Image 1 (cartoon, one colour):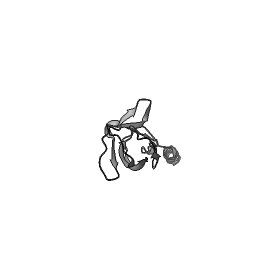
Image 2 (cartoon, rainbow, N blue to C red):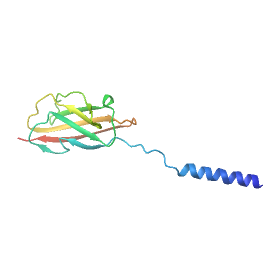
Image 3 (cartoon, rainbow, N blue to C red):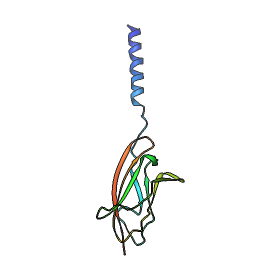
Image 4 (tube, rainbow, N blue to C red):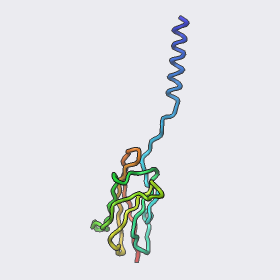
Length: 126
Protein backbone atom coordinates (compact mmCIF):
# COMPACT_ATOMS: atom_id res chain seq x y z
CA UNK A 1 0.00 0.00 0.00
CA UNK A 2 2.84 2.37 0.84
CA UNK A 3 4.50 1.61 -2.50
CA UNK A 4 1.36 2.53 -4.42
CA UNK A 5 0.92 5.69 -2.36
CA UNK A 6 4.56 6.70 -2.99
CA UNK A 7 4.19 5.97 -6.70
CA UNK A 8 1.03 8.08 -6.93
CA UNK A 9 2.69 10.90 -4.98
CA UNK A 10 5.71 10.92 -7.33
CA UNK A 11 3.48 10.70 -10.42
CA UNK A 12 1.34 13.59 -9.19
CA UNK A 13 4.42 15.67 -8.37
CA UNK A 14 5.91 15.05 -11.81
CA UNK A 15 2.62 15.85 -13.56
CA UNK A 16 2.27 19.08 -11.59
CA UNK A 17 5.84 20.10 -12.37
CA UNK A 18 5.42 19.31 -16.06
CA UNK A 19 2.14 21.20 -16.39
CA UNK A 20 3.35 24.25 -14.51
CA UNK A 21 6.44 24.89 -16.61
CA UNK A 22 6.01 27.51 -19.26
CA UNK A 23 6.07 26.47 -22.86
CA UNK A 24 8.04 28.57 -25.31
CA UNK A 25 6.01 31.52 -26.47
CA UNK A 26 5.34 31.75 -30.16
CA UNK A 27 3.83 34.84 -31.62
CA UNK A 28 3.02 36.15 -35.02
CA UNK A 29 5.08 38.84 -36.71
CA UNK A 30 2.92 41.91 -36.20
CA UNK A 31 3.59 45.21 -37.94
CA UNK A 32 5.18 47.53 -35.38
CA UNK A 33 6.03 50.48 -37.61
CA UNK A 34 6.21 51.57 -41.21
CA UNK A 35 7.94 54.28 -43.21
CA UNK A 36 5.93 56.11 -44.44
CA UNK A 37 3.92 55.67 -41.27
CA UNK A 38 0.47 54.11 -41.24
CA UNK A 39 -2.05 56.81 -42.21
CA UNK A 40 0.66 59.46 -42.62
CA UNK A 41 0.78 62.28 -45.13
CA UNK A 42 4.27 62.86 -46.50
CA UNK A 43 5.39 65.84 -48.56
CA UNK A 44 8.16 63.98 -50.39
CA UNK A 45 7.32 60.80 -52.28
CA UNK A 46 9.16 57.82 -50.76
CA UNK A 47 11.62 55.82 -52.83
CA UNK A 48 11.23 52.83 -50.52
CA UNK A 49 8.82 51.45 -47.97
CA UNK A 50 10.14 50.03 -44.71
CA UNK A 51 8.04 47.64 -42.63
CA UNK A 52 9.26 46.69 -39.16
CA UNK A 53 7.70 43.68 -37.44
CA UNK A 54 7.62 42.38 -33.88
CA UNK A 55 9.90 39.47 -34.77
CA UNK A 56 12.17 38.34 -37.57
CA UNK A 57 10.61 37.60 -40.95
CA UNK A 58 11.57 35.51 -43.99
CA UNK A 59 11.86 37.84 -46.99
CA UNK A 60 11.66 35.03 -49.55
CA UNK A 61 8.21 34.02 -48.26
CA UNK A 62 6.92 37.58 -47.87
CA UNK A 63 5.29 39.97 -50.30
CA UNK A 64 4.25 43.59 -50.51
CA UNK A 65 1.97 45.24 -53.04
CA UNK A 66 1.60 49.00 -53.38
CA UNK A 67 -1.36 50.41 -55.28
CA UNK A 68 -2.91 53.78 -55.98
CA UNK A 69 -6.32 54.72 -54.59
CA UNK A 70 -7.77 53.61 -57.94
CA UNK A 71 -6.13 50.18 -57.55
CA UNK A 72 -3.35 50.60 -60.12
CA UNK A 73 -0.18 48.72 -59.17
CA UNK A 74 2.89 50.77 -58.31
CA UNK A 75 6.08 49.25 -59.68
CA UNK A 76 8.23 48.08 -56.80
CA UNK A 77 11.11 45.71 -56.16
CA UNK A 78 11.18 42.51 -54.15
CA UNK A 79 11.11 42.86 -50.37
CA UNK A 80 14.54 42.42 -48.80
CA UNK A 81 15.64 42.27 -45.19
CA UNK A 82 17.48 45.25 -43.78
CA UNK A 83 20.99 43.83 -43.18
CA UNK A 84 21.09 45.61 -39.80
CA UNK A 85 17.63 44.46 -38.64
CA UNK A 86 16.11 41.07 -39.54
CA UNK A 87 12.69 42.36 -38.45
CA UNK A 88 12.59 45.07 -41.14
CA UNK A 89 11.60 44.55 -44.77
CA UNK A 90 12.69 47.15 -47.30
CA UNK A 91 10.69 47.50 -50.52
CA UNK A 92 12.19 49.75 -53.22
CA UNK A 93 9.68 51.84 -55.17
CA UNK A 94 10.54 52.09 -58.87
CA UNK A 95 7.79 54.49 -59.92
CA UNK A 96 7.81 58.16 -58.95
CA UNK A 97 4.75 58.56 -56.74
CA UNK A 98 2.46 61.42 -57.70
CA UNK A 99 0.42 63.18 -55.01
CA UNK A 100 -2.40 60.95 -53.84
CA UNK A 101 -3.38 58.08 -51.59
CA UNK A 102 -1.49 54.78 -51.72
CA UNK A 103 -2.36 51.42 -50.19
CA UNK A 104 0.29 49.00 -48.95
CA UNK A 105 -0.85 45.37 -48.69
CA UNK A 106 1.62 42.96 -47.09
CA UNK A 107 2.00 39.35 -46.03
CA UNK A 108 4.95 37.89 -44.16
CA UNK A 109 6.12 34.61 -42.73
CA UNK A 110 7.93 34.95 -39.44
CA UNK A 111 11.07 33.02 -38.59
CA UNK A 112 8.87 30.67 -36.54
CA UNK A 113 6.80 30.02 -39.72
CA UNK A 114 3.62 31.87 -38.77
CA UNK A 115 1.98 33.85 -41.57
CA UNK A 116 0.41 37.26 -41.00
CA UNK A 117 -0.96 39.89 -43.33
CA UNK A 118 -2.29 43.39 -43.26
CA UNK A 119 -2.73 46.63 -45.12
CA UNK A 120 -2.49 50.34 -44.52
CA UNK A 121 -2.51 53.54 -46.51
CA UNK A 122 -0.46 56.70 -46.67
CA UNK A 123 -0.80 59.91 -48.64
CA UNK A 124 1.73 61.79 -50.73
CA UNK A 125 0.83 65.47 -50.39
CA UNK A 126 1.41 68.33 -52.76
